Length: 182
Image (cartoon, rainbow, N blue to C red; front, side, top):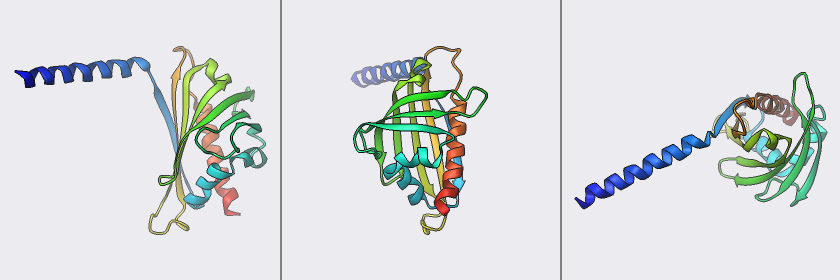
């Protein structure tokens, strides 16, 4: 009887967890792009030289300001970005983001938006970038796959999905791949 009671308690807890997760309505969007440049080159630009993005892509990034840290993508560092997304409005968007996690072994960085224009539309907005070599036996010359995953929770149902942000990530990934081959 005690085992049945434990199983019932576990099932109730599991069901409650599913209900809570379902109520939060956190969803995601992703894009994956294959590049000819190495995974390490691409990852290291975002890990150690991310402040170069406004110089490399002035058509997207208008400015970046270090709020906390050294400007690199280290856990806890905070930056403020001004950028535009493609489309009819081309409005400058301001965002304050923090580096939430860095996984060197898997070449992955998670950024979390803390404030700015996006937070008027979304309760949460996290961006995960993961870079993998196409051929693990020949990392330097195999090229790479870059995956961007955006997890977000809308403030209201009428807020659009962040398609324009995915488009920017895809465009920057392709252009940066070409830039890093020079």
